[in-house]
Length: 156
Image 1 (cartoon, rainbow, N blue to C red):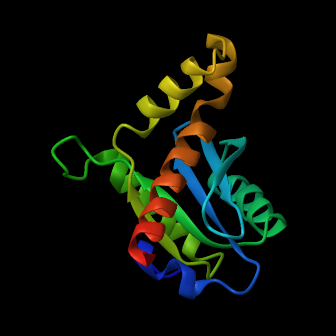
Image 2 (cartoon, rainbow, N blue to C red):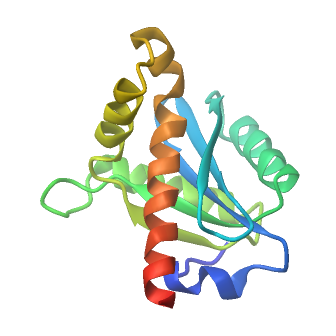
Image 3 (cartoon, helix red, strand yellow):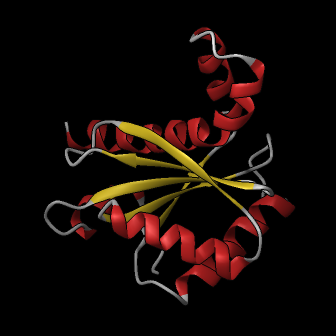
């Protein structure tokens, strides 16, 4: 799984493939999938984390089912832009996943993505209980949408 720049994603895709966005949490993996035109991110149900092998198997099966050809992985940077333990854990997850797939990964600064996702869910009048179930996938969609918007602005 090579690391690539966001701008290199379209060239890495085969015809018909989409991009997956991931928000890696300690208890869940939030997932979003783009449309084929790479313009819209849609949240998918989270994967409840157990052990890496089970998590990776479930994730790769879901990505294959959705015809994903690249991953945008949220990188949880500190507010000053430095990488702390959570960013290091995210990079370690990506390195371990690279042993199982050749799908390229691009990192996306995910600072405040969960905050933005929660605000969006509140604006949609989603109850607190349902927000807890949807927040990680909403954050993954926010991460992926940011990357897709970057691709759109780079192409225009």
